[in-house]
Image 1 (cartoon, rainbow, N blue to C red):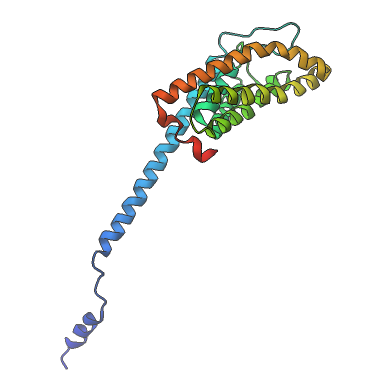
Image 2: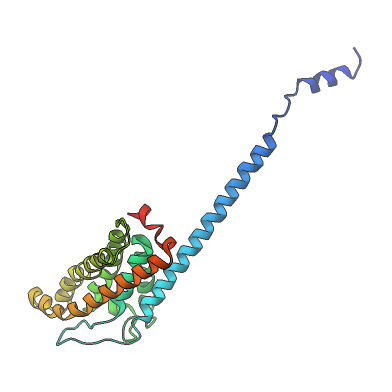
Length: 226
């Protein structure tokens, strides 16, 4: 036996590489990388949509407020932005858009109707309505997401339930508690909001149906959230 024979035997005992093994591993790595890139792009797109609708809600407060009778809570256009956020972005993203808007307000930015901002707004008569914005947007998005088709009547019903009834159900009791006004009297005073809120629900339904027709892909995410 020569000195080279053991080495030869040793090499012979090594397992042969699997055909295509390197290609399979490379393909798996490429797929994982592609999935990561796609996930990152989706997160960035969601963040952009959420920020856009938070800005929309703020812009709708720029025209100011209208006081009704002796009600301590004014009428604003921002409820329309809340309805649109839920209807177009979906439940989770719509609620996040409203939370982003409220975080800006809490930080002191004058994004609330009439140029208000700061933590004081969350301790006043409007506090319950601001909280109701979050829940209302979520409910609107949830209901629109359950529609078989995005129709005017379907979105209108969702807007009236989430954007009006839910917000009232949270806002009115908190307003009564903060102001010391009986709940029944506060509810009667809040009826002054109703005509304007119905008009906002009609506007939301019209805009949402228009967006659904022009850009159906904007509503593709509703089903998984519902």
